[in-house]
Image (cartoon, rainbow, N blue to C red; front, side, top):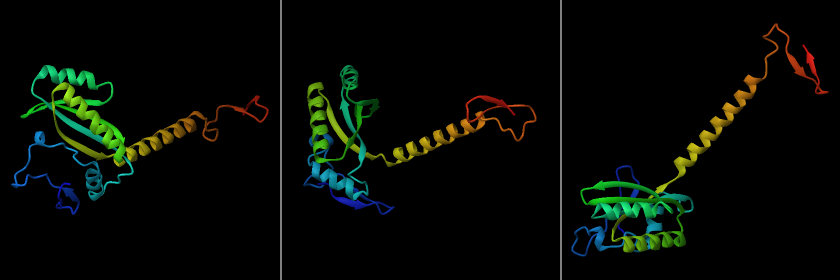
Length: 179
């Protein structure tokens, strides 16, 4: 399990893993998720709610462009894919929304390990992002759509108190009456 420290805002964050000699281990020497239970504990320690769905990204490095492009084409059927480069090589970010459960994380880990082995890449890291902000935005967007729909309905109904011209009103019988 990664050691934990507190950042300047007081949030507990995992520290990078170190070798017994105290030096940082390169990500190619270790599985970014060697212990699924430890990852879930790290997520909880940062204040995220592990019972909620999260946006999980796996960052994979390729040494040559053709394999990188091929991997992106292969992965697009199951993942949200982002291509970028870094000084270390050609990077592929594989992302999806998933539950932060032992079973879900173990399954995703196995999928990424199989893909990396098949395509000859190095799995550099994993990130887990909270979706609460996105859910709050969805709620706000839904409210705005409802407000606009309500305003559209109100604007479609003529205001007979401001108009001196005749208007048509559907009465209880459904027949139009001139007002």
